[in-house]
Length: 335
Image (cartoon, rainbow, N blue to C red):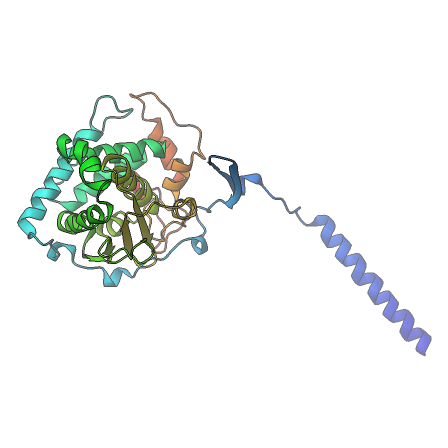
């Protein structure tokens, strides 16, 4: 009786083993693709750093940042800077005018006309920023264009003299002055903000920072790629290169906050993290803009009269399913 039981047990084990091998034979092979990773290179004085960074899937909602609740979105129209709403509207109109001038420049690959929205409508700026990002395949071009707009807002005699008269001989004082000016002149663009201390700066960083509590530009664009390439990097470059004053901007995409630190150079790691942040869940291109700027689609054209970029971006931005339902194509391409 024991021998029969042993034989039956052995038979069952053999059958189970055979079933596993059969299942393995018919199962699709597991493939790993180099396309799921991108190589990040940064040249330093002594070496080249090469790191494997997972590419963010366009449709994987687990790889996105939800961001602050839309229910708690501030009423930005009721927020004004220290000089009042009238001055804010003048500053907004001036910025919009300079931005439209830069985008419609005939030397651009694709000259972009001004938005049809009123000059005092903030969404007109978002419209232009979105089109600037969607029409330019090279993100360095976007950063340069944005920096050009900032340069055009200041008289040349200020930019020519500020580095040698203020930034270099009085760095801490210059940092405090720029922090104050950012709140006075930028509340209309960023929303509620305040001057604060930056303890990690040598000397304590007293009043050398600006805390943006929930950035209006990020809130309305809902795109981390637009934030990094149209605001963070060009603003840092403007202060460092044109004003002679280092600046580090640290956006928090979970809360919508952004911390300015005047007098502090951004580190390599901080810049890498900013560029590699996941897309926002409510991003209108569903990650397509990131792929476009990362150069993952090599079909971009340099013909100034061509609309091929439109087809390229549509392909990159095709949506399968958004949080609120299905959308047939990238909403950035809608009229």
